[in-house]
Length: 316
Image (cartoon, rainbow, N blue to C red; front, side):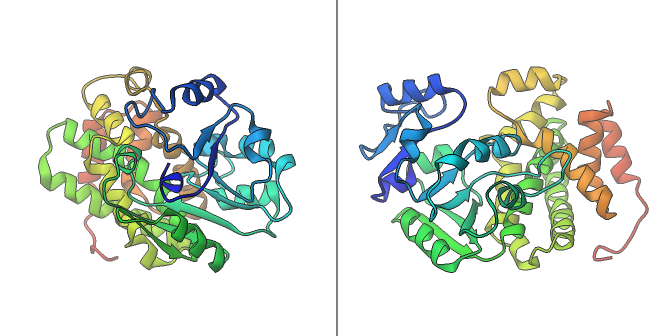
């Protein structure tokens, strides 16, 4: 929607929920997720992916990490030779542990301009035109600048970067930590505990990011610290709401049914654990979230495990 607001002709398509695309085309809005926010006249939804991509050079994919590879396979035969690809996908691919740019390279090759869009951006607030900033990381400076210019207006500012891995790692791990923050608040542990979790979570995020080739300063920016703070502290965050629900005694399935949208941190917790274990990276908070989600540990048991860890230097 932001691209359309800024004057770009936008076609909206997909490979799943084609009935929703048909409804959006007839209603002129996304009544399921953003009711009451009309589409600009230059945004055209269509359930026909071939029609959406016909003659299009620049393609943005906004799909969960577990749907990225299938989406790439669907668009591959429809691409132009000069197509440029960007994505807002966050998370590691489950079991392979690959970041989105690695999946894109495997499916489409590594000889075209690509970019990732990430940062502290709730869709509802962007749709309402509230002031927002984000990061665009690309392997091609001209592509990054073109995307930033196409997105930016009086209420939206896009910064550019060349650290694709760093921006992706920030988006992957913050969802896991946000589940932890939701549980922390749901259990009534207070502001001290919340800030400690976010701060030490940032250490974990940075630790894994650097091990995967990210630039440390990216972890301190919008796609790292910014997205982490947003997702951990506001109830528009699906991952935070998952944590709150688990703290109240709900099961994962019950919480998922109540939230009614994909909670990426649940799958991300498993993927992050696999990647961290393979690299020998210590991530105690993420590990405890994994234990709660997959090993039946209670939130109180997880807190006890964290607080009982051996004392050490903060920067050790």
